[in-house]
Image (cartoon, rainbow, N blue to C red; front, side):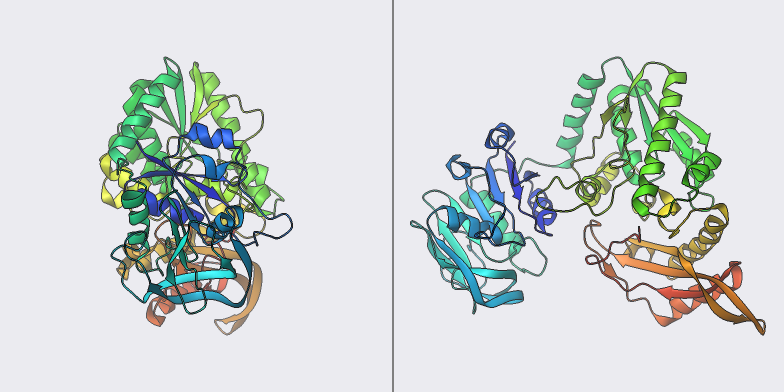
Length: 510
């Protein structure tokens, strides 16, 4: 199977490159720009992509690829910062641009025989750069330009090196998919061999070989990720899998009871249910910082899994529904990026973990997981439920988590989801939920002064959770939700609506 390796130099769009390439049927992975050349070779890439990044190639401490990266004999595509790196290392010249380009630009196609085959002239592309190529390297030709960038697309077909100053991976570049396809198939000569069915077969074989005759414990959260994880492992080792569903007191209204029934009856999984709500609340007492919440919850989960493993006997593996965005947001492993937030199943794991981890979905994006769930026979209603964070309502209670705050939030959240479903927009949204803020406001209820809590509503649209837009909910829907929460939820007298995109915000508040 052909594979594409993406070296990340810190672009906010790097994950989109991987997704777009996989959508075209070619497997791709992301590694940091600093990955040693030996490791790059061991990956066995059929082609390389150098991502964008926020720095200047000539700047002090600028991220550079390992020496010899252009001598591997594989096709290379440089995107934005990546094309500037290519020029910088191969004898071109990069300088600060007098006219920076951020946003839309019109691409003038000068040559359609290579990277821009069948691309419309003057089509919209997305630019985000402050430097420009002053001189292209020897052997390269300019095949596309914009008003402010003479070398918008460069090509060296002899060495199979290509570069674009814009971002073909984002939706704003209208012919971006076609440009990526031209690179992968017409120029690099790759074949589309990546699909969900082949992924399942590969993972089942890997799990069987790794586990042998041992048992595996899988933590179920009630979401699609952990369920798909358990179904893949069950396909591989059957009764050697024991699932554990923990009521941590941080779930939605009625969620624990409904899910326990579904796990056992619909999916025929061996599931142990544990009520540990008191333990989690006790450990969370006094904790305000989001990172400490997530890591505390992760540690308690592991403690309970280890306890159950001792009771069960023979369990040496812990399975988790970790997906690619969890890894990307929790660890600065993808280049010069920072930790956004630690996911409880990544950043919250203790160093002395006694289990070996099995994370079959670690390479997949959310939309790929949903496609996989459909392949495994999960009904669409469950697949398209809104994502629910592993730490549950703890990251939607801003500030200290206690039973009173959870009861308030749980009731308000139930109203939000109910009204969103009634409005017929549940399937249009990525997530819809309530957040309990650590502030009180003055109100008037029944001719009396109140001083009560504030609920923030969060309704967003997204395809993979990596970026998101707030949903332009109509005043009628917002009015219904607000009126019901204030009237039905004791302790709340004000409701506000969050209209922040991701980035700069995140979907969850913590």
